[in-house]
Length: 357
Image (cartoon, rainbow, N blue to C red; front, side, top):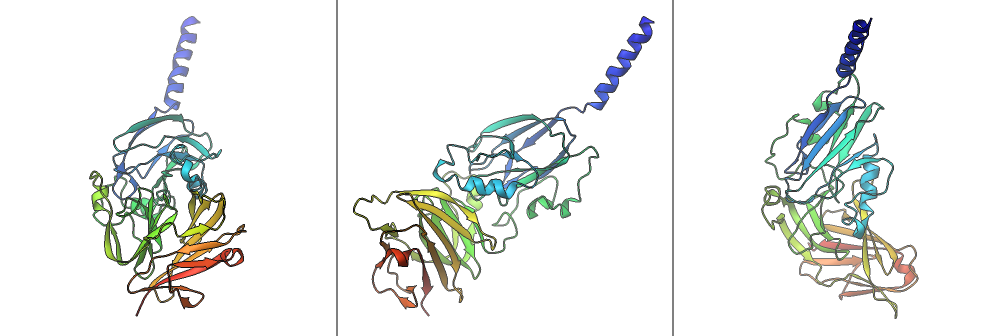
């Protein structure tokens, strides 16, 4: 009887071991062009998972694993962290964030050890460093069947990640097939490390600097060559492939007219609108300002649109006089470097920066 019982227990333990999958070990790093080198992987519900994430890039990155269908929301929340972002590793408060690393600088590693969700689904992983989350993401398939869609048709991956399960270096100047408008959070000449470079339709691009909450310059032609950055060269910056036709030397552009106002600026983040243009959000003395930039109708410049819905003081706008460029307000070119607006006029106004014919 005892021998039968021992045989039963031994057989039962063997079945338990067979039914319990071994821990899934995933080594993940970063490839040039804002890509995880592991575009996706599969785990069983309840399986132990260990991800060893190494930042092999020159730019900072993190890794968040989140609930299905929440990537865009989480990326937008991370963008709203503004000046607090780095201190919080660009991890916003959300119940949809399941596990995450801290911000990793070049060469740093961190392990994530967790038990896969019991609910089957496609769980995204994403880098939420500003400007990265719209192209730098992957997918964990949690299911019992082990099935994943054909890679080239996987709707949960960015386009460039659909080429191969084992990613390799990409020789193009862009991390994905670009269609303007699109942007990079990247290191640029003549701007702080908090620069955002945006390419608009019509071969018009601009650099917006979150450190000063202002436009820095505009250029015409091709966008950027990021090769030096992606190869990890120390202190590398993106190379402009066109010709700069406007530089904003009078900083800051906007000043709120108030006797007691120090005009302290604070970047609050940016969001990608439905048409893929960016809306920058910042504050001057706690006053919310929203700025969008698009190309002009003739694609010879940009249109800056400002919204300051709660403004109660007058405002001055400084710009730089540049040969070959005119700045227009309400259909007329500005003749000097300062535009004065009443509080009513400044609640929403538009300026056009255009190359002269």
